[in-house]
Image (cartoon, rainbow, N blue to C red; front, side, top):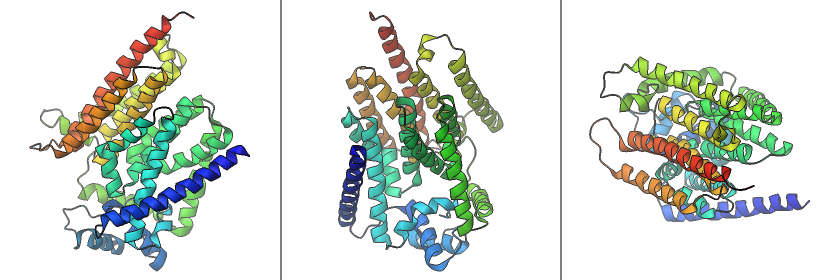
Length: 407
């Protein structure tokens, strides 16, 4: 009963702050409407609800273009078309009944509160890190755009925090499986991470998570078919069109970095694919056969391989826009929790976070000639490799200290 009172109180406070923050955003923004990415979803949802127009149709695409650009997009430009699974509109339907001037602040404040809630839950005893986590450019950029990357990444943060650092109850596992389903909404960002999440759940015998994920997949996909019977076919067609007009290539980040060499694109893609297989194989070996003390620490082992999988995910993605780089910050957030939970030097973690936050804004403002974008290439490369090194060295040194402490 006491737990139910806590949840009810949390919901009431969340709703109150949500509405209050939305009103504040609306007042501060004035005539400016943020959320260009959100507007695509809003238009698709609104035209479906009011006119029963297929969200993948050209009418929806042109309405989004006129709303965002004030004109129709040229063939060379981003067409601003809805290119997500139909069920992602279920998140937007409650907001689509409202005018965009009200809908967008509600969506923005909702995402800010979800992010803050997840970070506070992750860093319960180090809440300064929770607020510092909101200062990174990829987070702010995603919030301004209203992109779904923010919501999906914080779902993954919450999931791995619960599975790696806690022992979720069966009821919590049902909730985790339901949340994990929604990460399918952006498969280019989550497919490898999702596979790793299911493997960890299987290894830890959290079968309720896997069952809940499967039930959610069948139920919500079937519900989408009731709304739009051929949505899956239309979605695949939209993805094919999207990859053409944005000139997306697999392993875009790696290909951009190595564009000044003579290494063939096919070799880069093959090497990264082999790397992914090697990482998953390495995790299995570390789980079942490793005699190395550092790999026997389960939290460290899972976080290390999660780091590698996320790095490969970003490297293999067709585009590396800033909001998608929020995925890299999951490594930073969870790795820092592991270090601070081990009573490691807290000020080192704060210093690293502050540096990464400042660098994220510097790279945004830094003019880089040629095809090396500072935000799309330099920042994700720097944060992914440097944090992996920091995490390995700090964890290894600390566990070595603990192993020599008297029992």
